[in-house]
Image (cartoon, rainbow, N blue to C red; front, side, top):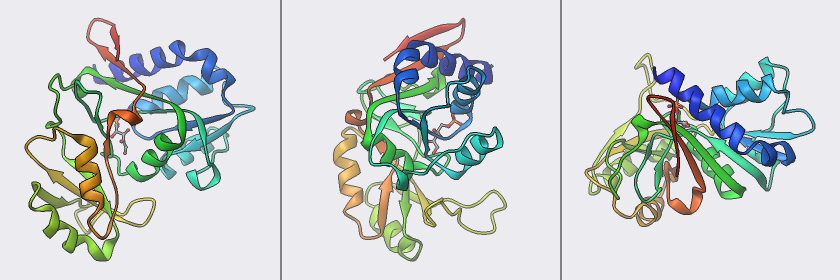
Length: 229
Ligand code: 5RP
């Protein structure tokens, strides 16, 4: 069912912003299983030619290249017309957590540089409270600072170094960094916490996307219901 709902929100987002996406010169595309449906639909409708596509990860870059579409990483772009991506949690203030796929650094770069930011999700990612609490906050850190950062983060919650699938070492991001997942009780003020964490030496970026980086969120619910936030 979730796969169907992921597809539903992605396709709805594409239909809703069809003209803007068609007219965009630089399109930012994120990472994850939901956004793959968005990419598939863009490919099906042949909407990616005559456009510069900028991605938030090598995973998405490779996916596009497999389909014969050339794409760029954020190093090659100063601004983005529209950025579309998935998310892990959204609260009633429209603050978001991203980064389960470890692509949060480039994702935040694209969100900051974009004129319009659209996120797609199924209803399991929606938190009706005005604070964040459902998902840990992923924090990208320079590898040789990981244990220092973990010690500093301990006053905010429980920091855990993210390990790779084989558990044979920490996962490495596309930027060559590690990820620490911060388990916490509640985050009321996402922007303040984001700024606070970034003051720690070694922190590169956090997966907190405060609502100033969020324009639209398209959410699918069972029964073919779509809500636009
Ligand atoms: C990757 C992300 C993803 O957009 C987020 O984890 C959602 O992924 P999915 O659509 O697979 O649930 O932030 O870093």
